[in-house]
Length: 240
Image (cartoon, rainbow, N blue to C red; front, side):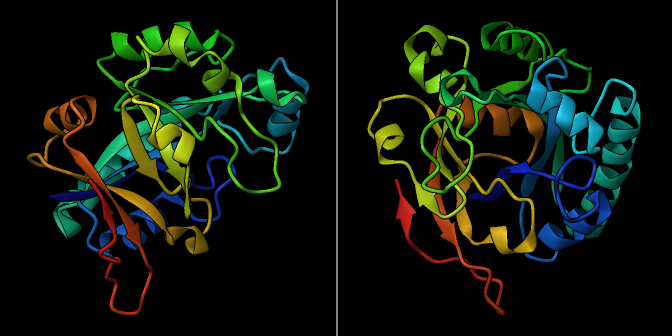
């Protein structure tokens, strides 16, 4: 089984660590596969304009530098740790109204995707690159923070184009997603080292991008709660 985390932020958007620091942080803890998914915000909304002003989002201008940095660090990650790093992005549509906000993870994509599109079209663009489309924290996150309900409120209309739905974000398992019958994945939504304590995904597949994405699509996965202990072990509490 491969240990993976597919929702990770760096200081290219609103994360604490740089991409090289994230690679070392996960590599030293024995992870097999990660995806770095910095925010790419809709810059026509008030929230998106604020993120641009505060330099907390990728832009079309910074996309190439982001991708080049990911590619260089992915080579180092494999050589140094045998850690597979998939390029990704969190397409971020924020609103002051929770029901209008949606965050879509695009995993294993390299070409810029316009975040102004509606979620259905975002998913289509992700699939054109043979990428994986994940609904990020689609329900109440169990924290006092802005929520992103649009995907969940429209889940049956979007179910045909979203490959997996986050069943956990950080340490919180979302029971309503767990029992929905939709395809699932668990991630940390890592912004800071203390976010490492969270649910993660175990994958029953070989360590290459095609098999990993297929394992998620076919749900050959389990969920494990990772405790960031001194021994770097994860708790053996697994959801089948």
